[in-house]
Each structure stands twice: as C-alpha cells, then as structure tokens.
Length: 379
Image (cartoon, rainbow, N blue to C red; front, side, top):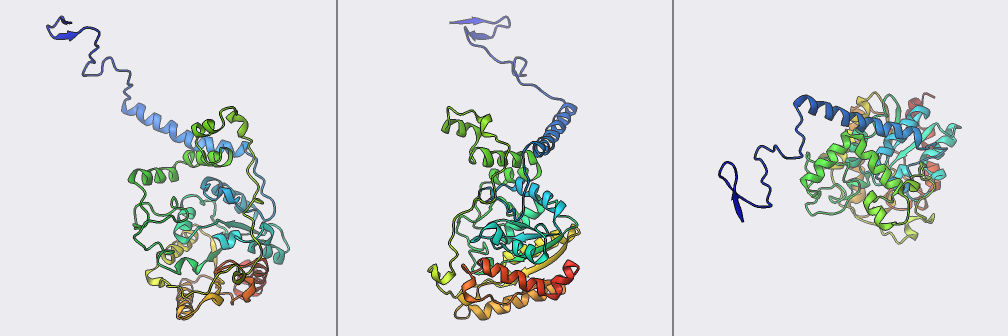
C-alpha cells in the first residue's frame, strides 16, 4: 500500500527512508579537533596500559634466566626483559638458539659458563631468542629492544643461516620460517614470505603501538595464545579473570633433549650449498644488527660460530673457510672486536651449530682467555 508524503513523493507504509544527509543516522561525526583529541587518547592508552601492566605482573628473573620457550614470539616481553637485563648485567649476550641454549638447561648455556668464569651470577645476561635468524634478529633489535642502549653486547653470528638459499630466505617457493613478524614486511622483499597486505600493515602497526604487542603477551601467557572469545569457547565454565595469575612462566620449562653428540642423533655429514656473503640476505641483516647496536652507543663484541666443521664434506669445508675469512675481514674494516673460536672436539656438538653443555664450557674458557675479549671486558 502506498501513500503520498507531504511533498508528493510515494512511500511504502512501514518502511523508513533514511535521509541522504544522514540526519537520522546513529553515526557520530567528529570535527578535526575532536579527531586529533581521540587519536591522542588512544595513543596515550597504548602507552599507559602496557606500562602499568609491568607494575602489577610479577617478573623477577633469577640467575641464568632466559626467555621461556613458549614465549618465543612474545616480543613485548622480550623488550621488558631487555630493560631488566640492561639495568643489572654488565654484558648482554644476544643471538639465536645457540645463545638461548637449544639442547641444554639454562644453567648449561654460554652465558652461565661465562658467569662462572667472571665469578658473578649476573655479569652476563642471556638475551638469546630461539630461531632468531639475522633477518628476524635485526627486526627484534630495531622494534622491541630499544633498552639495549649504551651497553656492552656480545653478539653471536651463526653461519648456519647461510648454509643454503632456503636458510638465507632466497627461495621463491613459500615455506614456514621462524619469526615472520620480525622480518621486513615490504622492503626488501622476501619472495618466500607471502603474507597478505593487510597482515603486513597490521604487523607494522603493532611494532609502533605497544598496546597490541602487550595484548599478544596476555594471550600467550594466560590464554594459551588464543583470543578471549576463543578461550571462553574452549573453557565455557572458567572465569577468564582467574586465568590471569599475573605470574610469568618459568624459564626452566623447555623441550627435553638428551645430551647426545650429533653423530649419535643420526645426523649425517653434508656438503652444504653455502650462500656467499656478498649475496646473502642473512649476512646483510647481521651487519644491520651490528649497525643498530652501535648506533645506540653500545660496545659490540662479535663471536662467529663455532660451526661444526666436522660435518662438512666435499667443497663445503673450503667454501666455509673462505666465508669466515670474508666475515672477519669486514669486522676488521669496521673496527669491531671479535673472536673466531677454534673448532670444538667432535663429541661436543649436538648438531651443525649447537654445542652441548661441555662445548659451551669450552667456548667460555676460550673467550675468557682471548686478549680482545679481555680488553672488551675491561680486564
């Protein structure tokens, strides 16, 4: 049934026609000033909430502390630990799983054995992050580790990430690699990284607004990495507030691993298809790590390896020797103190790059005796 409006325009009974100017809309239109004020409030909350959280969530890292294994993607928490470590330790030990201690307990890592040599339990702090290849480590240092400023930093270089084009992230075929949220999202382009444009933008926003990375921290620590909605679906009878215990998981919890050398694990020797430093994405990223640290006024000491050269066959050993020489030449040109440790005995490696506990102890002894390292420590 139709009727005419006062203006003569036909209308259907029971149907509401919105004004084209939005006069009956529920939308709120903000002025430019109101928009700026709103953005300012959101930015303030983005800083205030994570900062306030640090005062209520209990975090007291003890001797030999390292990032808990299940918080390996909690970059907000890594930044928090950096602030604590930088305030109380003389030397920050930075690197990937070789520093973290892939096959050993927290009291068997390189930083632990260096502390034994130094005679202090907190002289060296373990800031290793499992799986942080140089492209990821550069992003971690740039966006989440700003507290590492004006410090002494022992930076580890793991040649493992140059053993193949795949490790060097040079392949075109997509594959799952470690820490994709830390690598460059737009430039330089990484062909095997195929996240959508919207995902990449979200990652960049998260890097600059700590509220989002803090929210990820809460999900990882208290809700098993799930959103609140998904968690309540999985636990319909639990109060989510009771799940927030305000206690960070212990760093003692790590995957169990036997102290077995590589040849007892069934790992074969290999002729690695090394990527040359001049074309390596990972070596370029490692140089960027050094640059970021030095730009912030840190004193940097680099340790390369020790890679398990017992595993190398064919031309692989010769190629690696040349690569080590090129790495050292760059460090010399840049005036960066460094140490190329000798190869550890065959039974002290767990795989191609990770020492066992006795290997870390041997490496710590070698460093303690190295003249350049002694000078770096001020001894």
